[in-house]
Length: 369
Ligand SMILES: [Fe+2]
Ligand SMILES: [Fe+2]
Image 1 (tube, rainbow, N blue to C red):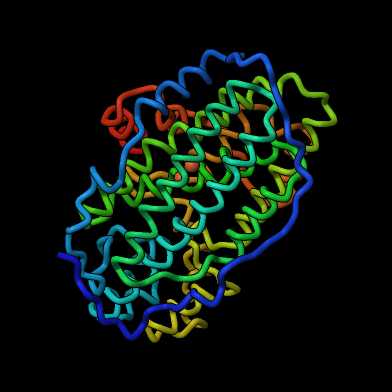
Image 2: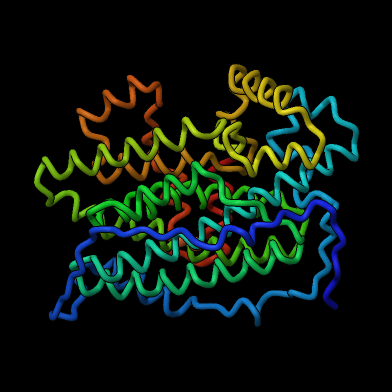
């Protein structure tokens, strides 16, 4: 039975209906109709076999209590911070409910960005097999928009898109090369998302959200894998100047991401949506961001609890390093920006597609523990 949620804190985003801009991307025809990479053909086959209908396989009748946190207090990185410890139990629950809704809203808006980047790759990539694969990613992303829109609707809390996330996806969509679109989406944004989905899957107490996340992760693991199996050989064969151009693009995107958010929490004092979370929960932003700073200084955000994955350290940076996008020149940019270079691909390779769903998750968790 569908439930009616009465909440005085529903966020109205209906005023923001669109943002339109032009890009200069080439559109490529191909007439060979062949896969040039066996691994891309394998991904395409698995994508076809693993399609799912969100209306059929998920229990949308499950009643979610939007006032209760969707993740447990001890599983949240916020629980380690001084501002959180000062809150009453009910304030802690309220903050976790709202900050999770804000995070889920970023999943929703980010999925729309992924939908558009996958469609962009479909028309711009000059490879027949990659076009077919990117078309499957496009329908995957449409399904992800569908499920997160439905779930946010169910909890009756949708927050606006964070400016840092929109800027990152806009940078990707406005780029002039399909390679950059794939770097921005299949390596950086999806690396970030796959880690966040894994952690959501591990920590949520809501069975419906757990099922949604599990099924989305199955698709996302293919998307991250595409960034490697297709783009890896492309980068190897590129002119060194073009490699440098792409490597610099990757560096700028990573730097943007890391400077915009505190330790990947999504908390930002320049994000009106996140400030609204604090307002809705009667938390003083000054107190909150001082506490975040304290946590950063204490290294809280670079540690991950057992079973959880650090998106930047475990997925995004190793993915860039593996395909040669951290060059001698950009290595010094990372050093100057104080961004550590993580190149261990153990967790990344375990998260990628190519195995059964259960094996995929179990291996990822085992690797992180
Ligand atoms: Fe997605
Ligand atoms: Fe994706």
